[in-house]
Length: 569
Image 1 (tube, rainbow, N blue to C red):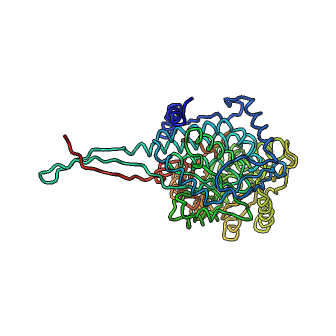
Image 2 (cartoon, helix red, strand yellow; image 1 turned 90 degrees about the horizontal axis):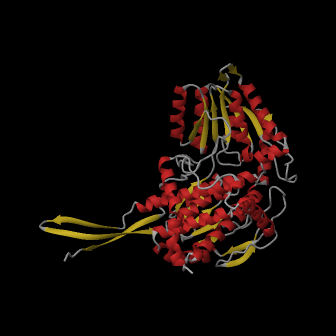
Image 3 (cartoon, rainbow, N blue to C red; image 1 turned 45 degrees about the horizontal axis):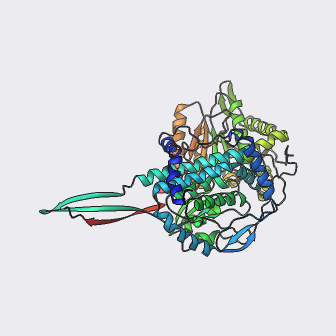
């Protein structure tokens, strides 16, 4: 039987082709994926899906088995948005000091391993996570409230591709450093030859926060980028969404152990809503790196207080749509209605504010009044939610009860400040009649200071605003101001005027928002493709890190050197 050390020599060769293809895709930004987004094309077939569902059902009401140091108790308070019943799973709670100490000890052997060894082990972790992707999908579905398909594709295969993307950039960054060099220079009449050795040194223990609604999508890249560059990882899940990350941590630990490394390179640090540990972990003296995904409010605190640790953040923003002129308004409305309804807009890329000129939208058949546009969009959104089966696949479920309160508050305020085009109400899910659900709220407003109190910040959930502006230039100015002041990850533009499009591209670029132009059809407007789409620019308050580029990995390790005089024989 091969030893752990022998196994690691084989792992890089096993996954070399996949990693090289990922590196190539990152360079030319073409379509690439290691995994099919269709569940029935999983390599395990229907049996794998059934087994994942069975394991999820068997895990309910039981303790989650995870052996790690520093356990001081157990906790767990997750509630399924679909059944509104507790999952009944408890997890080990650990003393943070014990996790940091264990991670620091584990880092010694891991940092000494070759780049190829670490990459091979990381790719094997990805392979194991794909093997258990149906387990993760069930966990995400019943903690975050995503639909079955989104849980599999968005939080499963696409999240894994984002993780591999991070590994590809890590390989590029580390392979860019030559391990040794001979250097010679003449000083006077003497030639000084030096042999120089360069070593890649990890920063230290990394703390990775995962969010409640999309726990794996940001966590996988952060975890794998840290591991590949030699850093141990402490995963801090949101208390309402522990299970997806507990599965990931367990798979990581099993692969690390089987490969001959200390499994304490990856640990889980659980907290509760009543006793949060986020600030403790960020300010811990052994924290070297913080990867944060979550609310803008806490994210701002993390960015301001993480020093001297490095901080990589993605928080939230106000994603805007500017509509000037279109060829096919029905197609635009259909795309907007679908994207604004998808997962009840509980995504950091969901459109929120739609800006249109008061004079209306120019179309091939004439100008459409601004008020008429809002009413047609409301009708399209209402249609999507009218059937429980259709709504379940698109709207899915509401992750947090606090979102329901926010919808009610803004519906009331919207009625007083503007006009409610579409009232929000619960709908009966076709498969889970007890699911926590709400249909979209759509409010029409006039641009200005009074209305800005409603739309000038991210309103997380199925909440949209149609905002009338003086003209198309004012619409663009309002939209890009949103990005600069409140942050924006993405933005959307519809116009048939190339000069206006060029101005918009420049304005959104300066505001640090990625722009999608004149897109309609079956692809969701906010779909972000691994290896091709840069997610977050770091140029506005929506976050300081990009998934994924070289900057996401290069500072996670540093370079030391030694040099010695060469005495040629």
